[in-house]
Structures are given as C-alpha cells and as structure tokens.
Image (cartoon, rainbow, N blue to C red):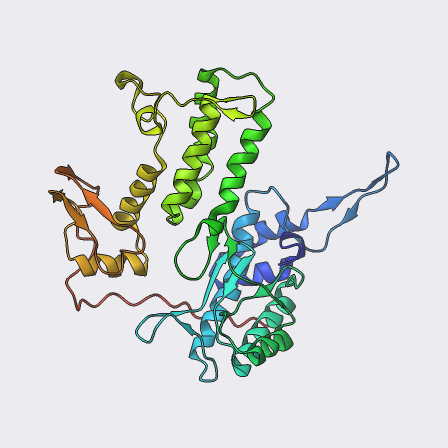
Length: 370
C-alpha cells in the first residue's frame, strides 16, 4: 500500500470498529484521538499557521498499528470470501493440500491465485473496492507478479493486462526471508552474507582487541542471521561461509592475507571453562529452531510431520537413530546420539494417522456501505 498510515479513512475505521462490536464510547474516544491532528509547515525557518488533517493515522502512536490491522482485516476476509465464488480458481500446492489464498503482514500482502481471467477480475475488483471504502491505494510501482518458469507467455500477458503490475523473477524477499522455488541455494541467502561482510568492513579501520572482536561477534554478527535461521534452513555451505567470515574477522589480516587460525571455530564455540570463547555454531542454532518449530508450531506443515512420525514430543530417547520423518526431510535431517531430550510439551505433536483435524476458522466478510 502507498502511504499506508497516511491514507486511512477515519469514517472507515470507525465503521469497522462498529461492525466488530466495539462499544460506542470506545469508538467515540478513538474518533477524537484520530481527528485531533494538526500540522504546521516550516518554510525558510518560519512556521506558518496550523491546518487540520482529514485522514490518516499518527506515525508512532501505539494505537495506530492496532487500528490499521483492524482495517486491513476487511481486505483479508474479502479475499478469503473469493474462495466461495464458483468463478474463482485459487492456488493449490497439490490436489490433496489446502488452498492457499494470501499472506499478509501490515501493509505487505502476497496473493496466491491462478492466471485465469475471472480470477484476476475478482481479485482486482476486491482491491479496488477496498481502495474506495478505506482510502488506501495500492502502490503499483512496487507491486509485482510472479509466474512459474514454464508458464505460457499468454498467461503473463493476461496477468499484466488485468492487474497493471510488472513481472518479477524469483527469488524474492518477504519479511526478511527469501522465497524461492525448489531446494535452497547459496544465491538465495546472499543478502545475509553481504550484511555480515558490510558490518565487518565498517570495523576494519578500528584497532580492536581479541576481546572486543569476541563481543562484536557474539552480540552483533551472530544476531544478524537469527531471523532467517528461525524461519528457514539455509544450505550448509552458506552456514559454513558465514562462520568462515567471522573466523577471519576474529583472527585478523596481515598484508591483505589471512592470519593463521590457531583453533577451529568448533573449538572456539566451547565455553570459557572448557577452553573456548563461547561463540555459537550456526548449525546448532539452526537445529535448535527446527526442534522448536517441530514442538510448538501449529501450522499445517508441522501437524502433518507430527502425524507422519506418530511420536510423543514430550520425550526423545534415541540411540544413534537418524530422524527423517516423511515430509520433514527437506527441512531437517537430525542425527541424535544417546541423549535424552525433554521438550516443553506434555502432549503429542501429532495424532494417529487418519485423525480429523479441526477445521480452520473462517470469518464472514464485512459488508460496508459508506
């Protein structure tokens, strides 16, 4: 959305709150907070008189994100309602899988659909209706569509005609994580490697001791890839490359040549009491996040994997067994030694095969008349 917070209609926000069952006293209070917006312009150091705003939410106001999300909920429900239209053909991973409609976070949204003419018309009609009633505006300069590499050119031309968006090639970055087709490759995670290199490049002119470098590695460099490691699994080559860059930074350079590494990165990962410096191995961090997702996540993939392995996640007692459940192998392959892993879950991750999972909640769309 273009200027997402600045274009929100106040009357639309109050109407959404009223449709969702908020009390009139609360709605009146929120209206007074939104409408009490006055601005002034300074030209050549001279302040001119104040003028009153007619729309928009205040940037930095702790109430603004909640109001914006409530307004965006109308668009989300309207897109979900398209699945009930017989002329709409959505996107399926496979014949037996669920229909994926859209993903949304704040003012960023990804819509999954087919390239059929009626489906494109219904989506654009929904977006234009949302623009008209909410005051929002789709930023067409930053909006793109993606197709499979084997898609016909006529399909590409049809989507460009009905949407007005330009085509963009994968991979793309959404919420800081790469989205790509097929298995993960090094090129998909080049951005995080560049971030680590750029951060180290800014520190090169400084005279840093080994203790100072350890602090920077622990609290700055190793925190950069945490978000990606918690959401996806990079290739092992990418993890090794990041650790190699950190090791080169720790031992330093001399005459544009790397100094000799007196200890491996694995030995440096031990605590101080065991002869290390306490840095983390990215592989261990990645596996820790995989265990967390397997134990606590409630998404469809995790439930399917839990149902496939049919095990109690409250207790792992494996003796040198490679854990490779069906469907989970592309994400992680874990080999556990003779150790006992107790996870914070007293119940099962999955149920027996053939179990009926509870249906997903479907909220009715709002009918707004302004």
